[in-house]
Amino acid sequence: MVYLDYSATTPLLPCAKKAMLKAMDLPGNASSLHTPGHLAMNAIEDARDNIANLINADPQEIVFTSGGSESNNTVTNIFAGEKVLVSAIEHPSLLESAKVRCKATTIPVQKSGEIDFATYQNLLSKTSPKLVSIMLGNNEIGTIENVKKLAKLAHQSGALFHTDATQALGKILVDVKSLDVDYLTLSSHKIGGPIGIGALYVKKGSPFTPLIIGGHQEKSRRAGTYQTINICGFGAAAQYALQKNTPQIFAQKIRPLRDLLAKEILAKVPFASINTPLKNSLPNILNCSFEAAEGESIQLYLDLEGKIVTSTGSACASGDGKPSHVLMATHHDAEVAHASVRFSFGLESTKSDVQNVIKYLPDIVKRLQGISTLKTKGDQND
Image (cartoon, rainbow, N blue to C red; front, side, top):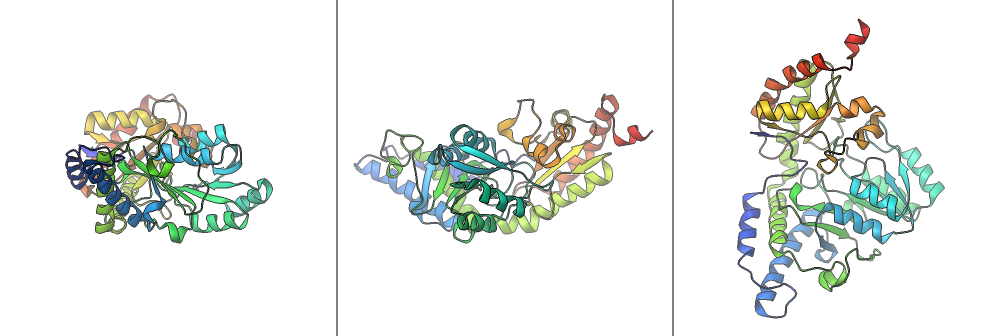
């Protein structure tokens, strides 16, 4: 199997699995005062330290959640009823919760997915928001935003700043002090940890309102029995990312593979285009569109014929039938959005993965274009 869907989820790292197995032998509830409870809490705090170290935060600024979606929902809950600015290409868990809970204004993006600073400054002045939320690295096309500058402008206007770093963590350097953000979303299963656990960085002194209430856990910031096993797995994955300096591995090993696939697709697949801004994007994401060929069909044929696992965009939006909101915001073209496929690489990806994609992809796309009712630009020119 050629696995190129790391942005949806990463395989569990051996070190994370080992930490989880060890945690399974801790029978105590971490909130209990007895010795087994203390042992479980010690393991949780060790994991919290590892996650804090990975993003250069204080451990007490880390709040455990069930994942990135809960972290994003927690942030919008803090600013319920307030004016907020959110980029048009945020994850649905941020976009939709902001629209429901807050007085949200959407920030348009350029074709590259980047925020236009002039438009942004105008919206800051016009709306006077309490919060701005702009993701660090986009999950569908990989665009990296200049969060440091965006946060500075937000602070100058009196707003606090949140960034969703779910996809960026482990792929590029994520330093909360350098970025100077007030809130930052993290997810375990994007860096080789288990599914079902995430975290929210909350800068000291930033306002906070719990999303889940009814318990004293996480210093009364998030009620619910501690998921000791998953937390330990998350902590181990964070420690691995820090010790191995995975951003450097992604820059030196994975980005060239991603760029090679882009080059091969443009050279060998008819009427293909690249949606990812290659010079300013996460090193592991490549989003492409293929004229007159449906992205979901390409994905299914790659899986069926070549055992190549890909995605058509955000796994959270898979199956809803709507064109990608990210590609609609960047390209304003439903055909481009419906014809897109996302290839996302991980630490274990190799050149043979690229070769396997190119072995099957051109013929699959040509076949689908041959039976499509849509026309390619070449057909239109005939």
